[in-house]
Length: 313
Image (cartoon, rainbow, N blue to C red):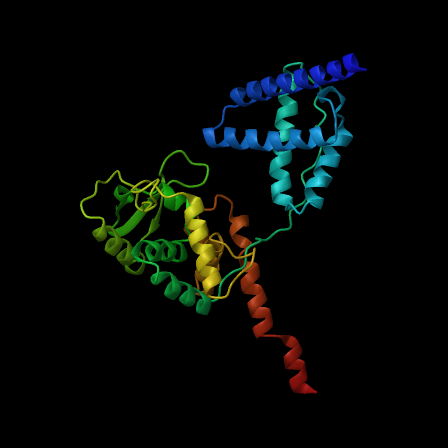
């Protein structure tokens, strides 16, 4: 009995060792950015943690098990978008194992969950925006400049963290901030900095004294990272904490809600779809059209035909 138990333990240890080697080889073979490699690694570890919980050997995994993993993610409360991204990495892994003749592609044909068209973050009202700006103003010049910038430009948090002081420039007489967008390698786009967006930044930068153009636009004040580049986590926490201070505590309201809010407000203010697409830096106009739904709902409620009928009889 002891010999059998020892052999079982040894086999499991070898399987784990072989799996780690296989995952490492896969990660190193991917022609993607370092951040994507780290994401692939985290995603695969989560998948294989589930495989371990199911007590499956790598050679035993079939297509039905991938479908079970998909169901487990959905039942665990993961959004269809998140589940889709997890499955994409798993499919890539098995495509690679099959191409290298390690294991068959058991994930082939497993579909990504259908994603409901729309966005899963709420849009703030003008009153809520003013409350937010009023509350964050009390936190200091840097924090106000960040939230104000997000509200007025629709920037993503990662785009704010990537910005340097030298990225503020001028194009055709307009003050702009050069932007390294999502999935981009260079700062090849821009947002316009109106006076209302720029003045708080200018006021904040004056408190930092002498600076260089290569320094981050916004820096950390923590003991561990004083003067270093801010992380997206810090900006997200700043937004979330301030939302709670004004009575908004919902999973559907985050720092990214400010991007959606900016887009909807451009449309509310009379901006056309193409102008909004350029403002949001969407490659596909269909993505921008999603924001029209909010405007349509507002119009539907404000001009309800049902109320017109009530005026007749």
